[in-house]
Length: 293
Ligand code: GDP
Image 1 (tube, rainbow, N blue to C red):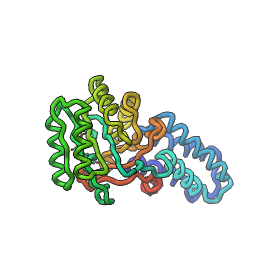
Image 2: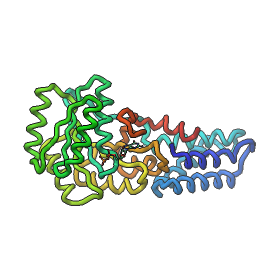
Image 3: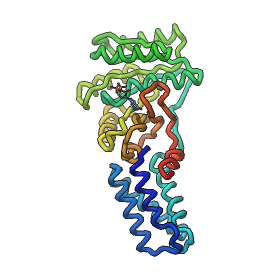
Image 4: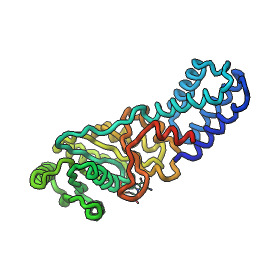
């Protein structure tokens, strides 16, 4: 994950190794390299600045200039800063007796796949999920979820073309009651880009169904772009948490490292393969360790 960023950070720190004491200039040069590595990984400018500043402060606080192992001191401070940028403590959606979650996001972000992954994940934890294919305009999107549902053994309620939010809510409630389903995962409509009709439709559906969580699915490969998408969704429908997909690909890391700061939302899960099993809780500390080798 984030192989290039990982390599650059390690290189910057390695340059301090075996040096005994370092000078202020050495530290400055290292911080400059770290900043460049972050920028090249498409990390948000402000996040990169704050990151480097926190590494500098922490390193000076630990008297890196007087230390005989400056590389280790800087490594530890970069680790801490990475963990912080990735969100600090791991966070999860709140689970109650009865749960209704929306999945929102652009077409292609991995929303439908993620809906199925979440269903499988929580089924494994003893929940009884019901998937809802809620794209009222694209039968192909509903079909895709139906096939995934069959594969993982989770029922799928399909909305009808042009079905009203009120009717969807009624049918979902009825089905959940009949089959005793306690985790309803609504795969909402996705479009190739943000457009007003989509946002208006999502807002109406949200009003009718009053979800406990609105999970925004973001393609980590799209970097900063993903975060402007997040802003737009949050403004119109209110997002409670993020799921980053395609972290198994060659994403540079910018989205993951900037998401918390730019959107103010926690990252709950990471998509790490195309398969229904390819979903992992998002652990900032483990990811920071992986990045630093
Ligand atoms: P949607 O249009 O947002 O519903 O996106 P899909 O769920 O159809 O996913 C779009 C493509 O991304 C599909 O080919 C998925 O198999 C793929 N995909 C989704 N999540 C992941 C992931 O975490 N890793 C990888 N490698 N591919 C993913």
